[in-house]
Length: 281
Image (cartoon, rainbow, N blue to C red; front, top):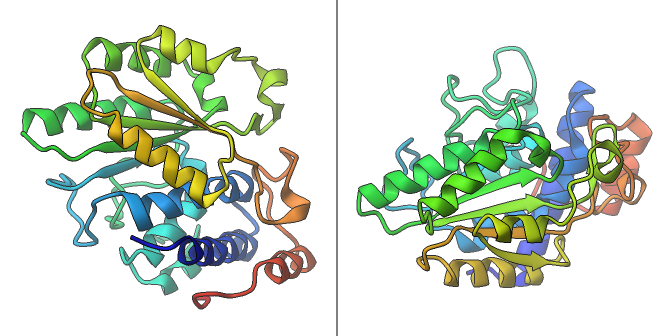
């Protein structure tokens, strides 16, 4: 178990990684990556039972699926700093023939990646299948997944949501990055989704809300509660209320940094707000 300070230091270094990776190639998605930083930090550093001796089957360990694959910078940074591959490899992000493509893929064999997630709306279906496989194999570990709130505008999600409850997939925790923003503006402007909590509950899920989705201790408490509720015949949903661009003041409170790289001056500004804690690559 990690202390809150250790997790905060880890997340601070991940913020540096995110903006440096995206800046280097003038391409990528910093906003959502920064917003989900603390969640993935807590998940990999404090909650999941997992091994860096990577196998696709993930037998006898918890498995995570990133559905909103465009936030690959945060995923790559957390995986590297958790020991899945060398931190120095982050410098190859989005380069030709790199294992760290803009959206995660599996054919490069990057440890920690079990599904390609460039196309939105598919991750929940994959995660549910993996959860059912664990049950069939007598494996008592859990499946976790992360989804954008705008991603729920894809219809396939709702078929999966209905299926998971109907088949009692109760070894599965799906987290929604509930920041209210997507590439073209607010989710309410692009496609209002109404009361997500009520919708998931109407489909037969247990729903938890984490109001401070960028607070380490709140995330730890939310995930602990979710884990305690598994095995009760229902899948679990966490509505994690995050801030896009969290931790870098000029990137927060707007959708503008969904898929935009910082300039040289903006990079220096961002790094000055997040002093080095674990060492840059």
